Length: 114
Ligand SMILES: [Zn+2]
Image 1: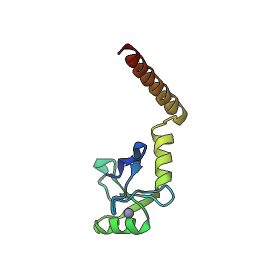
Image 2 (image 1 turned 90 degrees about the horizontal axis):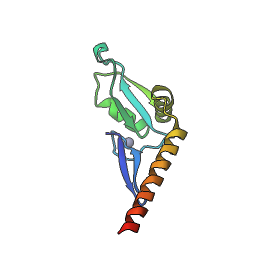
Image 3 (image 1 turned 135 degrees about the horizontal axis):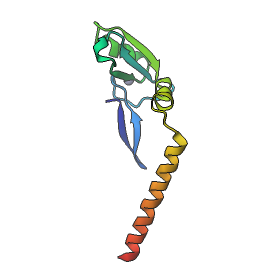
């Protein structure tokens, strides 16, 4: 499962892990692979994520019967977020900041009432 929550000193943060070696994937070298031989009836192909070209080659070698296409991870993610899902990053950050502020206020009220 390439998309994970990684435990950092500040808490859990979203991360991407390599499907081959399990290490964290960076935007600079990360790659997305999918089989171009997926049956048309499925209409979508699952993806694999690799941290670099060596791991991408190793992943593809696990499925010698399939032909794979490759895309840079950053290209995949920007296209997914901005084009396919139409996510407005500024609106999401504003909503999360508001939710955080409401939660903090609720905690302060609870503490004042105790
Ligand atoms: Zn790897």
